[in-house]
Structures are given as C-alpha cells and as structure tokens.
Image 1 (spheres, one colour):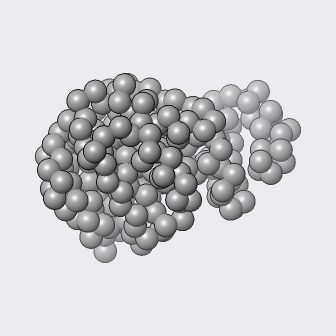
Image 2 (cartoon, rainbow, N blue to C red):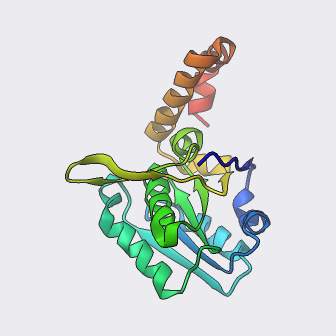
Length: 202
C-alpha cells in the first residue's frame, strides 16, 4: 500500500481522539481499542469516552513481546466476529510497538482489512513502528516472520503519554531519532546532542 495518511500530534489529544477518528473513518459504527496492562487506564478511558458510539469495546492484553503471537491475534479476531465488525469499522491500537504490530496485523487480515488507527504511547513507537505500515507477529520460527504491510488510516500522537514511560524506554526512542538524524540531517543531530539531557529527562 502507498496510501498517505495524517499524523496528528498534540498534547492531551486523547480526549478528542473520537472526533479525530470519526473525521477519517466516517462510516465506522463499531470500535475496538486494543491496549496492554502497562498502559495507564486513563488513556484508554479518555479515548473510550471520546468515541460517540454504542458499539465500542476494549481489549486489554498482557504487556510485552510474549503477547505478539497468533493466540492474541485470535483473541482480537474473535471479538471482531462476536460484535459483527465489518470492513467499515475500526480497530484502535493504543500502546507501544507490540500493540501496534498485533492490532495492525489482525486488522489487515480480518475480512481482508478494516480501518486501523495507531495511537503510539512510547517514543520508539511514535518515531518508528507506528509509521510505515509494517505489522508482524512472532512464531517459533522467529521474530516478525509472519506479517503484512498495512497502512493505518491515521496516527495520533500525544506527547504527554511519554511522561508515564520508564527512562530506558525514552532512551530507546531517542537512540532511534539520533539514527535518523545521523543518516539525514547533521544540524538536527547536533541539536539532539546539545539537548540530550533535557529530552531524556522530560
């Protein structure tokens, strides 16, 4: 897929996520938020409240790479079938790269694809895994060996979610940004070096 899509960045945007999503997925009647147990409940609560629909659901799974497998994909798909989701409806991935990959993959294969919204909550997911449409799950054969390229309809980024992150997660995301700057923009790289402490100690 080569579809372009909006990336919207704003503080406290989670509270208005429903309105932003509805602008893009005008025909969606049913919504499933997929998140994990490490994500503050207030994030999912804000999005859930902002969605003006009677048909909205929440799936909270175990956190971590161990959840990125076909069993959890099946959990998502069972909920989609149970509540009669169709291709016009919407899955919202709220979390880091694991949730984005898992929900993205399930969205891409259910009825040959339904609407996907990425709401990344880690710096690494915000600058890397939520962009570009790569989805994937792990198997006994290896990591990310099963997957698709499936673009979201929109990416919503709320920088305030970074305040809940452990420092090591910020450093991982910062390292990825440094890599981009090193490859493409020497001025940006110098700026990142100069401001590293302020960035990591958000």
